[in-house]
Amino acid sequence: MTLIQNLRLFGFGLGRADERSVIRQMWLVRRKALRFSALQAVFHKFQVAFNTPPSMFRILLLTLFSAVLFSAAAQAAPDRIRLEYQVIRNGLTLGTVTDTFTRNGNQYQLVSETRAADGFKIFMPGIVRFESRGNVTAEGLQPLQFQHIRSDAPSKLATATFDWDKHQVRHQYKGNSKLHENLLAGSQDQLSVLYQFAFMSPLPAEYELEVASGKSIKKHRYVGSDGGVIATPAGRFATRLYQRVGHAADDKSVSVWIAPERHNLPVQVSISQDGVTVEQRLVRYSVGE
Image (cartoon, rainbow, N blue to C red; front, side):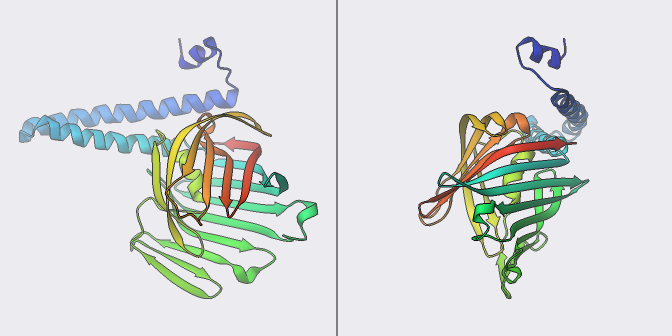
């Protein structure tokens, strides 16, 4: 009996798209496992030839197998994602956010556009646009360029440019330039950080990284927990909750609910600062491979 049949037997209904996703990920894991078995045989020969302690080879094999799993997760992530959210500020619906993710081979582009509802366009007449582009690696997303654009205020363009060879990121805002050195591996920008979860398998208990905006870079530490089943306009989702901890009292509090059964996509985001809470709740989504 196949895994799909077992899932149906125990009451898990899968649509055609879900079945294709499960089958594809099973095939990827099986292919990686076969490669790992071949590596294991090769290392056994080296162990005998060079009389190396088995414990050292076990450590090396575990390290390589972890890299294989990360690579499988990166390959299994969708190539196209579109998410639409409603934006709520202290209980009042202000507008919408539309995120699109596109992957082309080892390159990605993320675009997020925020539009005010008709009654609030006097406060935000234009479109707030985040753009992130970069590489897709075995560890997930590696941003190269981030932009924060306001259509009603082009002079307020803010950018972050990553130089991974030099471990630097350069911020530019209103003609001012600032260089941050000693950039840590795995750093993300304000947009890519939400989609890095789609490339994590298994999900970590804790997640620590640097997150860059167009003006600065800050350390973020997230702790995971069971987010329960949450109801959104797009439906009900079993979630994993990641909350930012250890930040300064005047800095932003961030909570992200991701859906493991939907490619670890963010189905709800909450950001609080100075007594104001802004939430994004998923309204509709589409995923393509």
